[in-house]
View 1 (tube, rainbow, N blue to C red):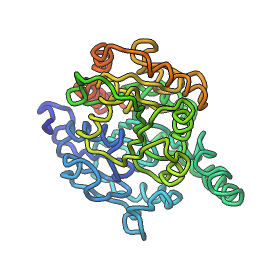
View 2: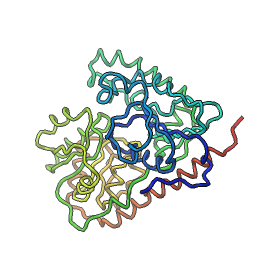
View 3: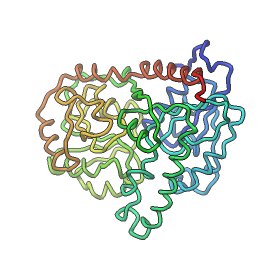
View 4: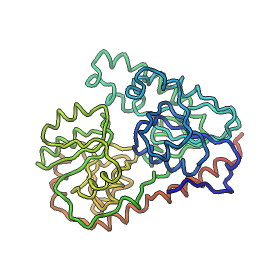
Length: 380
């Protein structure tokens, strides 16, 4: 899809910058960023850390400016360890000549400091999870030890206060789901429009072949994704599981899985589509902010077994495109897997539902929201 921008867009001739937390791989947030790059083809891109070659060519072609974190030892691999420095790093960008800031944020990107005349549109994937309601998943005693957790708690509490205090820097919030809009309301005391992220439904399409027996997880390998639940459920149900993704939890999950699961690492789009098409169903045990993988799976005609909270409730239609599981436990997911192993869905009905989340739909709506943000009167 080419990079294009409407010639009569209100940002034409104005200085626009894009801000993204970090560029270290192609996940759901980076797929949103691709669409934003197409809408603003001439804008510079600011980010805390850029691992060259880790994102798509469309993003790599962008003129990228990185923060001081980029120059710290081992930043390409260990950037998350520099989390307490992110406020200083993101506020260090010089935006004095900028008219319009567009951030895609799940951590610090929304907190850049622009001038009073600049408008700031933030597409928010989530308020900072580990600083608000998921501290224990990342930094609880089971993760970093009792002493480490006790030391980190005040650090993350300070980050949460900073995260809340910098919310007024954003002119308008757009949330990726109603679930995230609720969190923005609770933590930032701000209203947010809702625009579901884009999925390439022209690429992710059904296959004529019947599914194979395996179940699939597509996810970053981080604690809050609860991939351990899927592993234990697959073992209990006696079904094969394949896991696509990379992340710091790989060693722990591999040891837990034993022979239950096959870890495929990161895959290119062609290989990922093949895995979706061959799966009996995608398994999503986490409370997702939105969840790109379930929609990609549905676009490929394959149903989804998802925990019935968060963004999955906005995408999965029980009985038509999959199942919503009431409990986030291996037993509940194993029961759903057993049902899925003997249930047949119409792949074209599932794919037709996923078409509502297409990339053209997202980009058209985002352009309209950007134009409204830039031209709306400034509140006194």
